[in-house]
Length: 76
Image 1: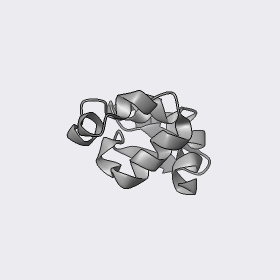
Image 2: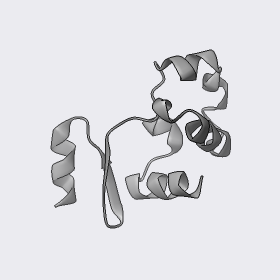
Image 3: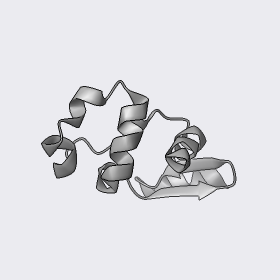
Image 4: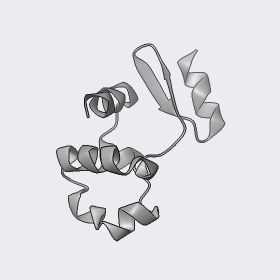
């Protein structure tokens, strides 16, 4: 989970801001109930990685969501 926390920090977002709420694993596991609990959401992301937005591009100490692709230009 430390990797997910580091990723969250590099993105400058809470985990609820880069989770796919329409994903089957998100819905079937009632993860809507833990959207305000960062630790629980990190644990869910570790267990169900498909619920994370993707792609995520990391460069050094910064990261961006790769959708739309133009976001990656922020890492120059």
